[in-house]
Image (tube, rainbow, N blue to C red; front, side):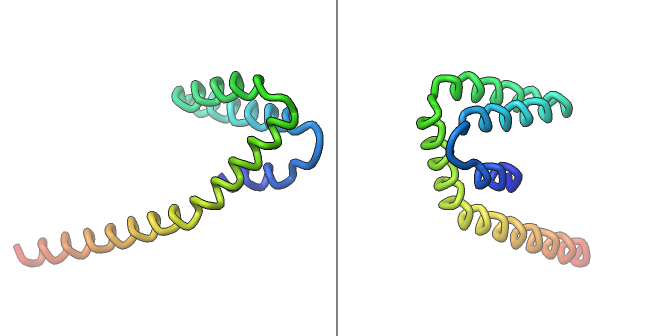
Length: 101
């Protein structure tokens, strides 16, 4: 995901649609290489939908995605910390349970 954010931050005025299509094609090639059928379908659909935008619409889309990503980042960090804590607790309980039996 950081690759996408870095790429989006480098998109300047003009040719936003061209750059977004290039990014999606790169993601499509990556999905094809790892044979991820779900990702292949999702990227194909994204390419189809992006082709409906003009350059100004594409810039608005990119800005909206960027804003959405940064709004979700704290929540994703919280979820990651919570999962780590739960895994630690699970490990402790399993060890305690095996010592008890």
